[in-house]
Image 1 (tube, rainbow, N blue to C red):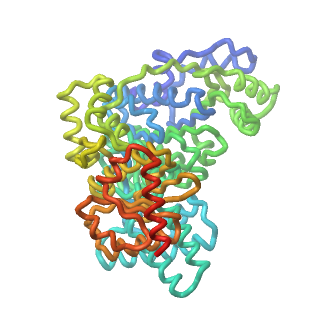
Image 2 (cartoon, rainbow, N blue to C red):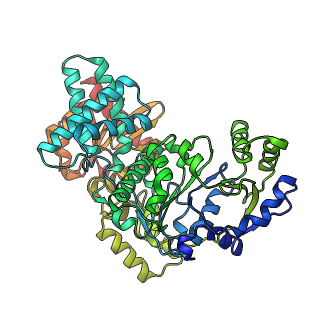
Image 3 (tube, helix red, strand yellow):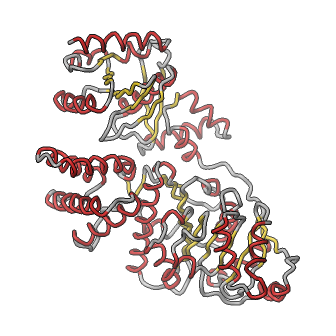
Length: 556
């Protein structure tokens, strides 16, 4: 039989390579299982669930299985929240996609009506942002309004357009003196700023992903909420693609969903596990706890693998689930086995052979990730060109490869550069990934943050359409810091600064010396040139200037 059609080969190949079976598991009711387990000749259900606490060996086990599936010519889509699988990219010939550069538009309607899509989105966002009923109703109105406005302009909505709608609704609520609604919209705006990384100019082509091997990195999306929304969105698109292309009797695609427990009771993941087989799709769900997995995932996964766990409630659930009852103290014995597992060992139960066994997974050798991934990690914050190149050399890349790698990512605008020339210690060519505004703006914001950290400030780079570029704090005083390139309309800047003054103790505007004249007219703030700011060597001198200027502002 063709290996691709015979899922039971997974066990044969695992035994051959990195997994060994422990036949010394001393329970009488297990003994017959080991004699018959590897002789399975047919397998219908392809789905696998892997659970266990952090550090117990789940990701390593998934790496083993992924390598085997690759060698058996299966296509793979790996949803990777922690970059645990990027080291496999070269060995399994997989394309690495960073979700912060190449994403999905969950606002895409397809064949759904505005009402249907609005209802679907508001339900998803309510779940992951943990919104109350009243907040959800308000969000529903905002989403529907966004769709209606964008339809008139014949363009697809996005998180940016929804955030703009929230601001409009908030302004209207304030004009009507509706403080309750204004406060709710303020809260929604705060929550939605963490989702702006889901807006990308480039989108993943599902037709290409399902017919190849793709590792999708989710770490750059920042929050768990953003990662979960992305995962649900892409799983829905895969499911829609599968329906459109009809049923298949041949297993051709495996989807690896790490941190699947964070999706909770998830209709789309449950539906893929329930129906995926008829479309030639297998799901490998990985979670720290079994109880947080969708019920359909738990019930319909043919192979259930549990690594070490000690949390009492989870231990009781998993031991009962694996044992299928407590005849002959099966459950209590499984519980004992789970508590005594070493790293890399797991108790497994199979749908067709109900008795458990112990698997031991060998370590997968660490491999150098692709340069694109390393560059992406290095440019999460601003970095000097010399430092960037040295780090790549340490990872084994030669200068020619480094030149080509940087050039490719620059052409794709995944990383960008800007040269500082202020006659100070920061003068250099700097690189940064995920530039949201202009390279000058975002790299300058990063360098301002470095200088403030040198001065002992607590610093958070906000740099979104809602909120300051930098929020800084020192000695109990909260600062909002804006870098202005001079490209924004001056009245728009003044309105923005007025909002900052309401919410922060002190507001500082930094710009080039040549642009300083444009911002000195703004009252209530400290305006300073980058040339002056970056030459400060000590915090005391900088704070002395800040206090002096703000005392003058207060006197006025």
